[in-house]
Image (cartoon, rainbow, N blue to C red; front, side, top):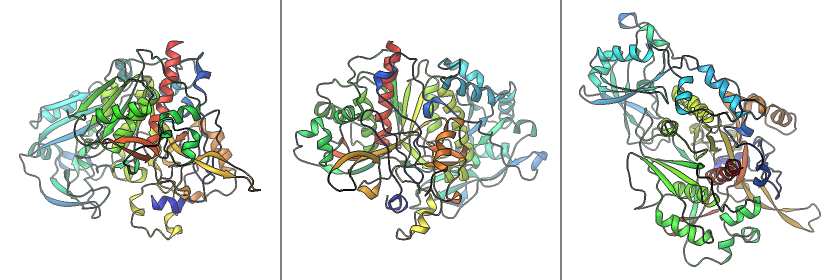
Length: 593
């Protein structure tokens, strides 16, 4: 993004070695805190579990408290109404009484600390509980509500003719469907339509949501059991982490097939062969049958069998098409029609580096409980958590502005954290792209800023979510750059942080969270960084926040087959599935040991 170029053009450097994986530490803010080394070095140790950087994690995130205002009917405490904002959502007409509305009520865990404590224990290699993962039932027991919580809320809803109620023990969500008339009665509120403002990145225009225009009432005895209600929550924004750079038609040069270091240096794109050569990744000749990996694809993102077949024929030197298990919610056919860049990139590279491992693909065109076109993170996590044996590795290439997420829908964001911890205690490692917009991020307030005004762009760092969560492994992007010594007599190739100032279409995201405290495992690395010179002032970033990304890998100019043509795509959503596949290979070695 242009704004990222302004904010990060002179701030990034890297330290990398061909005989290991990359440790990128931009001098201004982009801290990389973990190293992925040769896969063969892990053969004699336990199954690698990375729920966050180096498999360690951080302090408990405080539970979300619902905002209270003045008492309402029946002396019930009330929850705030949906907050209208003229730049994103404008209030429309009163909802029709017979219109059906889906509402989600988040139910609080009776002992929330139990999950957090176990999460750190099973993820810390120095802990005796390391690697002792739980079954679905055991994990759900850690987050079970107070015994009477769900029954009492269900009875209360039934008193107002709301009987379509389903509780999910995997996510602690009470899914409710009822008429506007019944919901207005039970919550003592009014429900209006709100229309998205055209062209705004959050409202996204031409969208209609139903929300409570007045405060919501609940019996006091139930309030402590409820963590959020979707009727007063803003929809989340949408950002993809892949940037395409046009299709190249016609014949491809022969060196595209092997994509040697020399060919990449001369302008050729990155292929699986190049990644294996640079990082020393062995070819996968066999796979443990219990091993699996997965990717979700949201927003109608689609891939095609034809593109995957062409990609493997051109760039995989005879490897067979991998085994895919698709989960489509709602059902849809991704094998016909137009493919999209994000889904094609994710699938082609996570399967290319681990081609013999079963790959799950979640194609979800639904929404989160708050709108009709937002990241269905919770629904996706619920699907994984209900599996008897979930994949050990998942790669997530989606991001959003942390400030916006927590200002508009903090309860929804917080509800995702225990699900990430649950995935961790189930043995699932979650890798998340760090974003493609440098330290400026995708803050909505910056979108109308004058690109020529550096001071205005760089007033404050804009972290991304969910990559800023301490319960995931955040993945940044690098690129090759020609480095010349001070004498000018020779130059060499080195791996540096991906930045628009060096010709990339993206600048790898990184920084410090404003919502999550820095986990203990990061203290030494971050304190060392904070002690260096030439870093931004404390007003620019949260010096005590969780630093990200944790690891990096190449993310510049990946060759992808898109609707039958070759495309060059850059992004942390390129590096993320590639690195996730490398960890799948590590897990394969563990399982076969």
